[in-house]
Length: 244
Image (cartoon, rainbow, N blue to C red; front, side):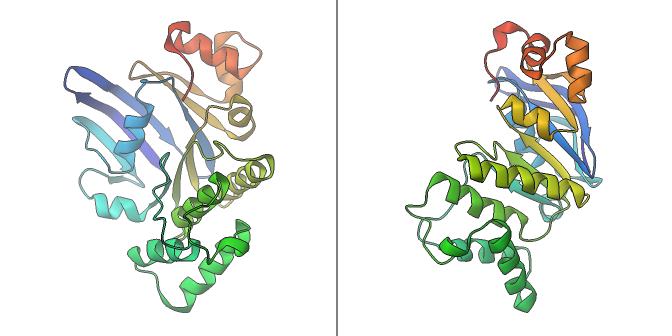
């Protein structure tokens, strides 16, 4: 479970996150949406231990990420917007390296890597260096790396951005599988059809604050709109730009 309580973060004169609070439960897909500059990315970076809040708390399974970032990292799998792959490592080496950082080794690790290669249809690229990989292939490697240690909490930033139709379907099926396994899934997407189809709950951030939270139907009802995109524009205000 992921909990955010009164998060506040400033960068000089800019208030990036202003008293943000929400929760993402186990066995639920929670969408985190917000326009450019809303504070969504800063919130995700706090949750993934990359930056420390000025005040407030971010909790992973009850563990304060600012007090023990190492313990928090054991409990999360993260697909960042910048995939962060090493060009001279193979896909298999990326996944093994991430696993060993989590203390995994031996036959159990070999089996886990094989399972992920099959799950993400990566057998054909497993032993190729990622330099020259397509965007979709790079996303698959980053996903396998994020999931190899079996985290209870998974954070995915734009997981289907730039993917073809088949790869997009595979990632969506994976997200549903993680939810059905009881994982806590927090993800961002700019594709409203995808958000509507996958998310059990949605948290909308604008101007550094949570401006709407609930199921897709609840947010549409609150805004008095028939579709999620129109509801999103309504709750954030038309001057807020496009969702990122």
